[in-house]
Length: 157
Image (cartoon, rainbow, N blue to C red; front, side, top):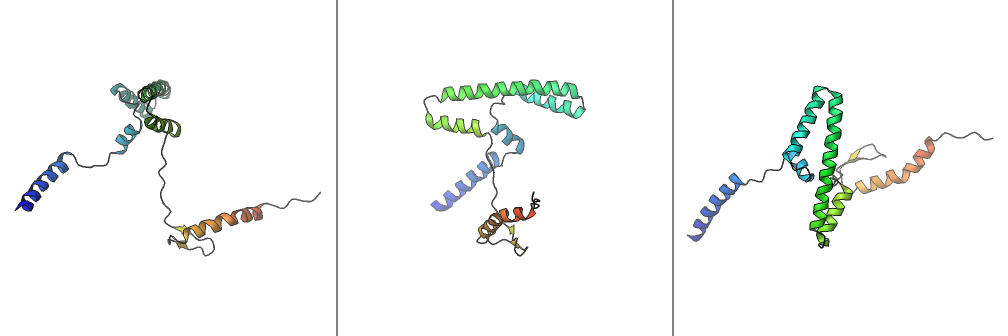
């Protein structure tokens, strides 16, 4: 009896959560805004839209002037954002270092794992994960010799 009641309540709550707070991945546009938290004001977004419209319209002089002003505003906003961030975390080293790394590195690298490589000896594509390191090693170890063969011989004096 209790498990039936619990499962009904759980199912109803689960439906409500999925309806009102579903886990939808953010669009590229939203992800870009999250990665640049210093662009927050509606005026800045409006300015970006106007700049893009000027680019599409083909008015090069106005576009360049607008872009120059927009870049200045964005740089100023970024400077103010990090100034406030480091002032808020002045005594908190755990939050200071991620801010420094974000400021220095800028972007995080999204690397994809190797799935397949072409074996230079047999010209076949290998998908076996245990063979991939050997293919990379054989390529790297023979790269110098292969390049040396392609260099033309110099004439003696």
